[in-house]
Length: 307
Image (cartoon, rainbow, N blue to C red; front, side, top):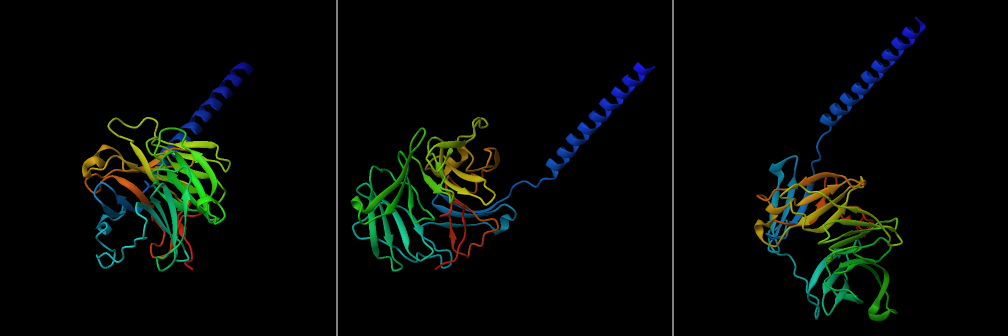
């Protein structure tokens, strides 16, 4: 009798365990169904068609587009055409909170230039060993990170250094070429969009590679071709543009935008070739006030006081 009692108790315990496990699985499934899919409000520059797109995934009636460089947001006319004497090939520009502007140019190598509020040249530096500059980004400690052919170079203006340029750090791409954009976070770490490596690389403050954000096995027919502009969201997620070609119809080849969680999981993608061409840069707005001065020198795009 004692042996039968123990056997019955064991059976009841196993049944309870199975019931609890089943309830947990059911609860997880319900929670997954109830979880609202990610929807963003964003600005995207469409290089294939030369258009700036505003997209609101929650309300398509609010979407608009602007042909560049012909139009201004308010007047639909060109407001200003800034040219620095003797300097061409400007590829990237960043406005600082103090009203100054920093330019990155492919001109006799790679140059970084600083303009005052009246767009007059204040100083410039030539970045040693750099070629084929893509994006520049400012850092919270006063530097400039330049994404170029071989990787990333962080520099700072220094009148005493050769060509006015102090090299702070150089980080090569782990593979492929044509890095497109780099960000330096306030903790000293770096993110680098790897161009034809179709990945975003995370480096520690010492320049050591810590993580790659990529889709290892994309669905058949999805071309992950060239990772261009990137943005870090306030929740730590990383959004990347997937550029798939210069032609207006090339956006049909693959997802235009991808979003990764901090652990590297793909949590969102956007693909609408009927609406837009190939994506080259992105600003996820969501709860940001687009009328404020937005700055990503901390690594995360956020509103900061204009000086």
